Image (cartoon, rainbow, N blue to C red; front, side):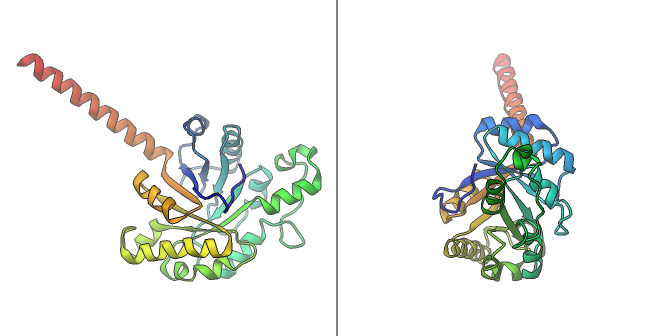
Length: 258
């Protein structure tokens, strides 16, 4: 799936926390547009992320990866594995944003090396010119802004040529400010990032805890909206199923006694 800033209704995805291929397959069957394999807050290693990328794409979803940090040591291998894009967590300066996203662009403009015999190059069967074009034009290079100062300066990050998307990190923003996502000042920042993305013709991303919150971000115009994550979706469904079953059992028992 090609991720595009031109899609008017936005794309819906979720985080991959559970280290299992079956979960990703189920998300594809459920109809998610993309997943983000979380190497920052989940126990996924490089080899596992590779398998997740293959499984997600085989089930009709774009496969994005959130890097474990902004050092960038895994960038080359994740892109060689065929990832559709990378999210860089906790970016606080334009210098860091430019440095790490340049690693995602082929030389001589950037620093990515030729890997045409990798999975991204279809094991050497792809036309090299097409492989290079896809790598530069279709790879999502998204930085996560998660502090107040960086989000207020979102326009500066969008202006970086090697950055083609900005993701709003509401979790760490709330941790540092004590403000909820519903706070009016936070919502001003959220709308500001979406407006900047439209002006620059780039992608905007954000995560939501609930479907209702996710719909509000789609309505604002966010390109990529994350809703919950595989582990929480499963946990909540399990808890609701159990509660409903117990409630029904108790009601039936009460009726028998009466």
